[in-house]
Amino acid sequence: MQKNEENRNKNLTSPIVRWMDANRNSEGFTESLRRLLMYACVEWIRRGTSALLQPEEALSKVVCCALSEYPVGEWSQNPENYMGEIANFCENVKNLPLPASLQGEIPTVLDLRGVKCPLNSVRSRIVMSGYPPKKVLKILLDEGSPIENVPGSLIADGHKVLFREKKDNYWEISVVKSDSRV
Figure (cartoon, rainbow, N blue to C red):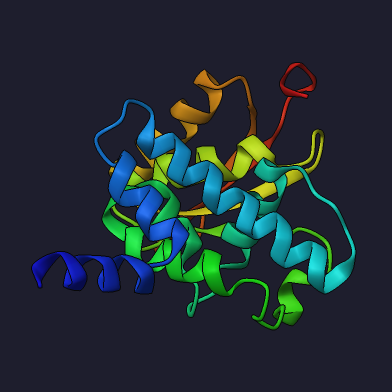
């Protein structure tokens, strides 16, 4: 009786969830989840625009758009904490309408105000990994640790911080992906 229940539940579980369950303790699982999310973003954008982006570029574009209904930036920072959301997104991406913000060029502003350290560094690095070379990205950061840490992490990755400017109660930095990062 219990075996039949297990088989029934297994049949109701999606292949993605079964893969997650089988591999969650494997080395490299976090990066595999992030790659799965990248490829879902590629498919979503391809289906909606016919554009075929590289996985890092597709993730970068979706994260920059900061879609409240699909917080992909948050999911990609700690994918193991959002396995259910990632599985649901990946399973439904073929039927999700593409928001207008994803139909144009990649955004030039990444607003990380309110994102706590070190997650703002993680998110900025994820975006820059897929950002087009030589294109300038403005990143908005809170006072304190964010403005102290994010520029340094981007420089350590080989990007160029062109300038930092203090605004009312936040900072704006301009970053460009260096030629060596192509």
